Length: 193
Image (tube, rainbow, N blue to C red; front, side, top):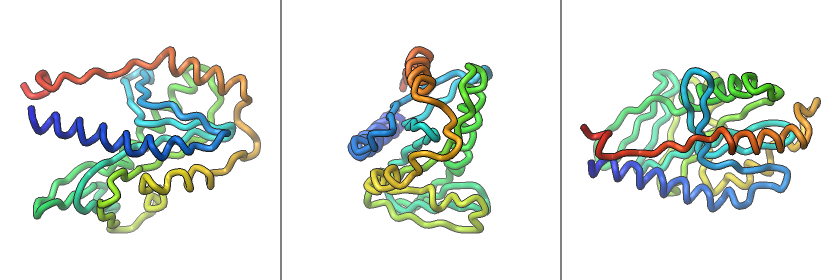
């Protein structure tokens, strides 16, 4: 139970650190935080979703300590911390699946198909980042330190042509996401049975 609580606390701290930098989101973008939606098959949760006239940006926050190795050949994330190695599924598999689910959700609720750009944000400034293997999908450029987030957001294109949705559709999207959002409640005791 203590290990589960530490994971939750670490994730929360990482999101709070990232939220600090998300305060500098450009005026043409809107930040929706901790969104959990149902895609018609199952629920999915996004740490942060940024909207603009031209695209949606999925932000997935990681707050690991030590050294993180993104192993693109084996589609895994390796954390090396205090001489111990932990192996996780590549977080890009998760965000690409969230992208698929969000695309499905948009279609199901009759919203225009807007380009979706997923990013992995590393919130702990002391984490050492390494990549290994062939980066066939350009994921390395989508691993961003939290402090670089304002720079990234200001660099993303403000408009692409054609503009996928107008301001009324975007506002309807924001309201509908808030209506359909079903926050997840964690029971640490239940998860440790």
